Amino acid sequence: MKKALTVVITGASSGLGKSLALAYAEKGNTLFLTGRNKDRLSQTKSLAEEKGATVYIKVADVRDPFDMETIIMDAAALKPLDIVIANAGVSSNILRKKEETDDIRTVFTTNINGVVNTILPAIYEMKKQKYGHLVLISSLAGYRFIPQAPAYSASKAFIKSWGEGLSQSLFLDNIDVTTVCPGFIETPLTETNRFPMPFMMKSEKAAKIIKRAIEKKKVLLSFPKTLTFFVWLRSFMPSVLLNFIFRRFTKKYLEKSK
Image (tube, rainbow, N blue to C red; front, top):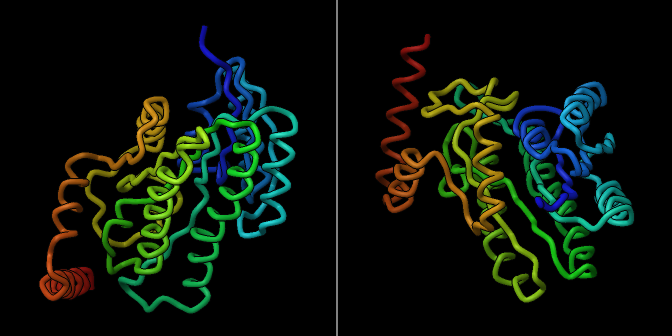
């Protein structure tokens, strides 16, 4: 018989977070979902409940450490936590304009502090219960920067590095860690991008891929494979050559789109 799971997911009101919530919305499973938009979060709750899951929602900002600690501790008090997915994130790009200071700070505080605020209390609770699975959503941009979103790339590089490190430091505590580096996914985040996004994937398909990787307890998941190969190859390119290519590409793209 399949084990019932207790799953916490941040950023579950839309995009990948919503698709992950619905992927885990099975009879017997208990979901604790957070997001900043009450109406959209309530919609996710209704859809997940229709599929048979027990769902609790909480409107919260992952940038608030007290909020996240309270959510994780309250969830663990009701049921031991099987999986905690730190998914919430934001992006910005500078292909047409310079990133503003506020944009950069928002990206860092959400994508870095938000993940830290989610994962630290989860580690505490999982150490107490002596098992659990942490999932950190990074990006292929975390392998090496993309010039259209330097702050986003840097934040995702932090998550990738921290997640891979945690997988080694927590295995003696019987805590698994999966770091996920997806390519372009159709979400409200990518709707604002004004640059080519090859191998774009539906969030529902991405959620299924991630769920399978969690079940297999993969340490690092990067997809889609073709884009991962080119990103991996690019990580070996000298910075001088990479800068030359990107500057020419950006200049041509801007001239073409005038």
